[in-house]
Amino acid sequence: MVVCGNTSLRYLPVSFNQAIGATTPFFTAVFAYVITCKKETVHVYLALVPVVCGIVIASNSEPLFHLFGFLMCVGSTSGRGLKSVVQGVLLSSDNEKLNSMNLLLYMAPMASLILLPVSLCIEGNVFGVTVEKARTDWFIVFLLFGNGSVAYLVNLTNFLVTKHTSALTLQVLGNAKAAVAAVVSVLIFKNPVNVMGVSGFGVTIFGVVLYSEAKKRNMNCKVVKREIETKKKTSGKQSFKC
Image 1 (cartoon, helix red, strand yellow):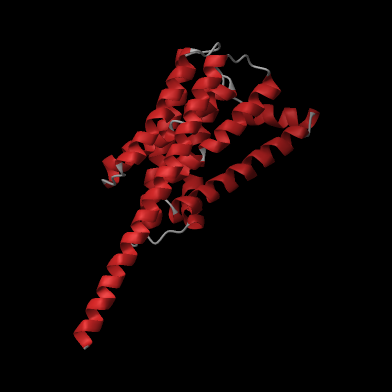
Image 2 (tube, helix red, strand yellow):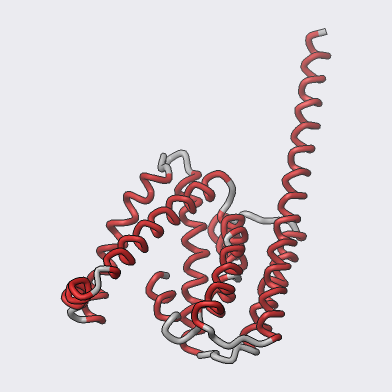
């Protein structure tokens, strides 16, 4: 997921990369159904339609569209959805008995062991180059440390949100980040945008709002149903005692 995401940034602007990442809820819903057989209501699935359609519109009108970068970004997005579902299973299982910190503790060294040899093979003397750059410009040390610290906080927060809500809710709420990142990308990198691209991303954000409302309504229905069942059980116990 990380490798595909970083590779896509070489060929796609950050704004378009974030727009594609907004389709993560769609992949999360698919993997959640395949792995955990968890079904959502019809309204929740319908709310995901504009999320995907908006990206299709933005992709067709993107001035800097690159097929390989697009495929890498889609691979990273689908991997992010799969990761959310798997971590949701690990955090919610009583048999595993994992909390957010334990999961991050086990995951980080494994990720390092996978990425380090790949990085050395692809990028060559990356450690020596980094040290050389640090000698001439110390700011890169601050950037690396800041990037690692933010990555740690992001993963820890993701685990906490997944544990207390669901993998699909985490990815849908995360699309608000995509909107902010896209705007900041355009302001910093000055990459060209057009009306169709902005419209497509607007449709995606509209789908996120619909999803949030559908989940909220579904949650309220569950609460009401639970209260009714509790009252029925309570009244039944009282009549039994009498």
